[in-house]
Picture (cartoon, rainbow, N blue to C red):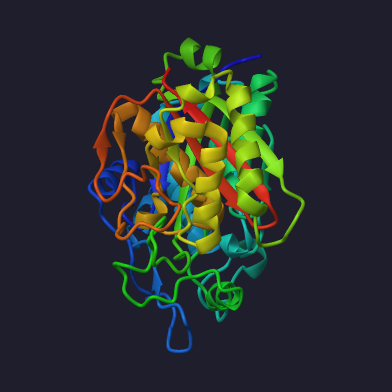
Length: 401
């Protein structure tokens, strides 16, 4: 079975329109939250989000033509900007590759291909096509491998990464462009998540998203996209590619229990982390830090903490745990991919990003959540979690190469 390595990164988030900007602001503890500007908010309970500035538009125009971009949503354009950055970063020359052995997979959900307002009907069919982002990437780079989107709620882009890894491991493909996107804030999204009491109604951008703290009251929506280029180790070495790290393991698990609530005490979360560790060939004491799902909801943060304790035992208390959603919000289908980029950068730099806005600890949530300030330490492995509605769970393990 072939080893899978990461050779390219791209990101658009509320704290940066490229990877370096995103990463530097993340480890500096910058917050991407502000009062919502995309839509009128007078009739909404939630008034805060992590919106991207429009600088990504110029980046997207660098790679794609005006006519193509006009037929896409802002969310797709964020993804295209991140894809262009990732392909440039990996420095691959597609003219020298067998492009039937390079594919594209992205994670999308309902808001990935919708704009803030419904008044623009121009190219509505193309704008709402879930696979538009993968199609445009393959057309630009003349790639003829698998091209499709994956929808598994907040685990979508993690599923895209793991499926791509399997296609490389079995020898079917040499490389895959993978990622995820989260569309702009919409009335439907705010109304829907408020109806199920999942989103914070705190109007203060500095305290609305507080993962693992006592006074948290729900997640805060974030915009964004991220792309990773995955390659087989031998293919990357043949072309002398820069290798960031290895994608050493992944676990996928369906709780098959409840459409919105996870299994009691985080049992599904424990199982999927255990599966990822088993796939990686590592032992639990070789996990150096955890990028948590960490949504800032009452149930998720409690159950994820329980799952970590149940899996790692006493070792859980010595594992640094971060939620970068405290900086960039919950980016839904893009979350796994954005957090994968952060995990890769953690290994590359030896810096663990903080969980910002952390104040009063909650009862039973007594692990090391890297509060408010980044931490410098050697990191060989990162476990990254994403848990979606419908009990669709994914854990990825990145390992120093």
